Length: 484
Image (tube, rainbow, N blue to C red; front, side):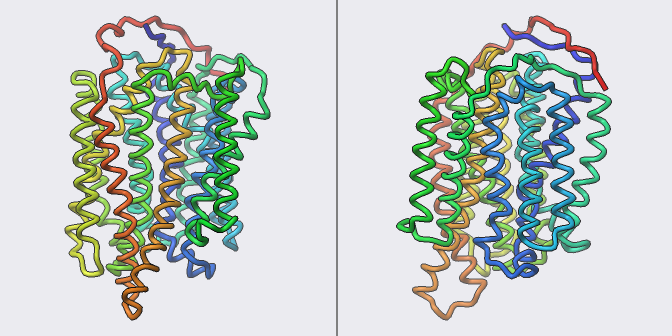
């Protein structure tokens, strides 16, 4: 039995939260298409430039676990408006950046705002809509989660070619201003403010754990695994995460209630989400590099070549959402995982410096046709198994792992991309740069294809968490009035 919280404008609230999250997630990959421009402007290498994406995701991975605690200390309005204002400040700082360091700081500040908005969005949507409508609502939210980072390179390619990369941030800033004004007027408070004790040790362990892990993976693009710069933070990060997990399971007021993983379909759904986010973010950073550096397309054309795949995602997400309530998750997750694997096999087998662009477009369409059928059903089915009191914890745990997946995917993709180029140069030292770059991207897709195989195997075990019909009759609770 679930509890729906009655608010005056649930669709308006959902729209504000989704648009805010979309702009933030768009920011995850928007600079991917501009990496070569940024590298030229600030005279830096790809391994340094990728921190604009990896650093953004790293902040999200560190902040999101704390979100379950923040949602019990601050009202919904405070978190949403605060997240939008912080995002606005970061976007303006990045737009005005005179150096790479300032640009990176602006990105990290923007990530703090997104880190506040994402878990709040998921938690609020679970509370203000009844169970029997969650399929459609979560379908749209799944579209936001995948379309934001996927559409980033497409839209930014057009912006970069016509205006310049810093306008990516100016346009985002305009949206943040408008959303903040709407949030002040329309966001209602739906969270339960209990103000639990702040566990400083858990926060430190979480920050060190996720920070060390992602830093180590990112550093592997420049350093060998035997380097202390890689294995030392990796070891510290793993130890910190183990201690963090032990503390969450033993303390009476955990920062993130890891007991949500006692629910098997939640655990499986979160794993499938993790693997698919890893695939999406890896692809989102590799394809722009490939299309611009190997096939020599302009940023605008490279972005437009990725548009059909994103269009498929837009079309499919609401369809899958509406059918989910009738058919459940299994047929979608299984079939979608097959298409994700097919798309990645196509990338792995066709990428070269002379590949016809239509083959890349078809592979990208197959990939996102599958992604659109996997993401929302996995996420919704996972969260449906949790009781209401664990929604915030489930959202925090799932979002944390999603951001870790994104950061890890980006870092691993660049690391393998760099390794692939080095290996190719050993055999072909006189190869042209487009051939070298294509070889690096193809090498990285061997790993991404392997991840797709694991996802397909996991999808075989998906089962429906709840009988939606039994949960249609839900208790309705009224949210407190909006306070301006």
